[in-house]
Image (cartoon, rainbow, N blue to C red; front, side, top):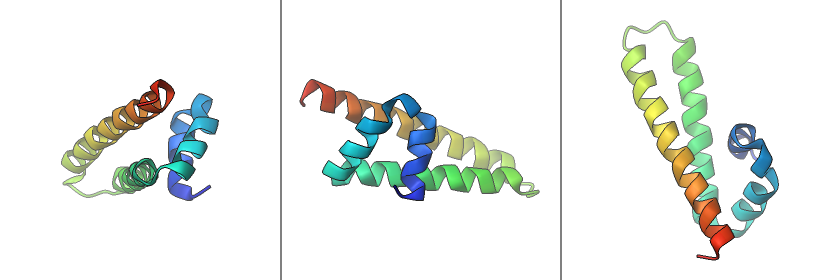
Length: 83
């Protein structure tokens, strides 16, 4: 499992098996998970930073992470529904 995918599994541990399988089967979903993992890593770096622009950046990154989480869950639901 890639480091980026690990972040998705950490966020949704009950869905680990489905996340791993869908990321192996679906390139779009794998890319979505990688984007999520990258955003989480960036947010962690900015939160550790002492930069004055940190609050705007972290807020925007948190919004992106929330959007990606919703998209990941939608993709998993579509898989369940057979869409």
